[in-house]
Amino acid sequence: MKDEKRPIRVRFAPSPTGYLHVGGARTALFNWLFARHFGGVFILRIEDTDRLRSTEESTGGILSSLHWLGLDWDEGPGVGGDCEPYYQMQRLPFYLAVIEQLVEQGKAYYCYCTAEELKARRKAALAEGKPPGYDRRCRDLARAERAASQADGRRPAVRFAMPLEGETVVNDLIHGEVRFANNQLDDLVIMKADGTPTYNFAVVVDDMLMRISHVIRADEHLANTPRQVRIYEALDYPLPQFAHVSMILGEDRTKLSKRHGATSLSDYRDSGYLPEAMFNFLALLGWSYDDKTEIMKRDEIVERFALDKVSPAPAIFSDDKLDWMNGVYIRTLPTDDLAARLMPFLERAGIEADEETVRRVVPLIQERMKVLAEAADLVDFFFQEQIDYDAQLLIGKKMNPADSLSALKRVRTVLNALPVFDEETLESTLRDLAQQLELKAGQLFGIIRVAVTGKRVAPPLFGTLCIIGKECVLSRLEKAEWALANLVDSANV
Image 1 (cartoon, rainbow, N blue to C red):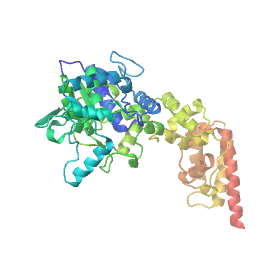
Image 2: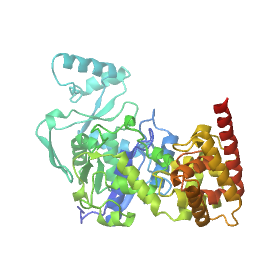
Image 3: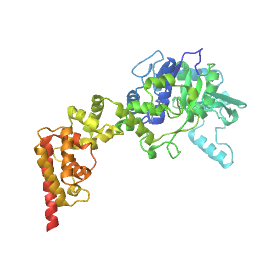
Image 4: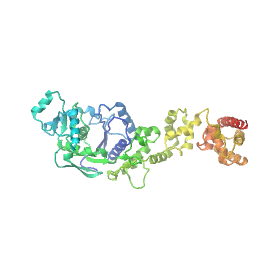
């Protein structure tokens, strides 16, 4: 895959018109992996020629998402490089110079057709059953005709003169040889009437001037490639090697979109997915090392990555697999690291947690989390003075309010007498008490769990009691007794 004659230089060139989609993140990752595998250069270029939709906020979001994923760039915004600038709207002089060259050589021409005229012709062509592409009427205008159009105040666009016959062949590293009939490719606009370059033109000029060796991008751009190939040839510049990676589909085999759930990298970050898990997961969307290896460290993926193992078939984005993988990574984190990562999520949930307590809680919940955002519901009761719940939850399985109240009173009496309040002592004491009360352990523990956490499902009971502390546990048990007593009184009325 490596071209020994050209240094490896790849780029990721997003348009800052919205968030960074997971598909774009996967493309960035493949470029980064390819560069790092070969010791090449990874360039970030911002394609902001869509002046209506491009925003600084989107640019900042893209940069932030790439940083979060751990994709550093060797040249680009904030880093610089010998191919500056790295924003297309700051590169207009380069495009204008190339436009002038192509027009002078007869490889491009001015088109004076208005948007209304083009629309009317497309409509007429469709009505006649003809292809709706541009009819090339300005391709061979006489000088007098051009002068007349200019005198009318028409601002011309510039079109590239595509070959009228033959084929354009694209040799793709993933899809193989792909052929395009030239008579099906119209003369594309390369510079709009307002002086803004179009994507298919600007991308070629930028890739040429930035000495890009490999263009690794989504296969939706494959249809653009024959036009770009012809522009390269018109500029007498060697072609980069192209590699078009497959589309990402949802599990229903349709194009991944918002109806499948989160699609932006920032959404996954804010939901509590770990960057190292997302890195691993995205790397496996269309690429694999073998048919069984799923969990790989970053360095392992860099070492093993190769374009010849990228499949041309669509990749399936499985939320279940991502959740599983994120859970695996969560379980490998050291306690202090996981506690620190949980703090922002607890704060966002309105929980005033101290990191020391969170560190103590982590071993109780680490096995239970798939995403960091789940921690708030698992630990909120540790940091609340008052917990609210339906008193009916205090009634033990196959028990009535009176029996549950009696059992809970015994629990409080026994725990109050304990000289040591640690997990081992709590477990042995409460298991013995369950036997004395002729209750199953699950019946008694269920009542206690609700009384001290407000939940039927909570972290392991004895560790929870230990962290909450004896004084708070006894206070919550007493309040639970009052709630049960009210139920008993209501039943007796």
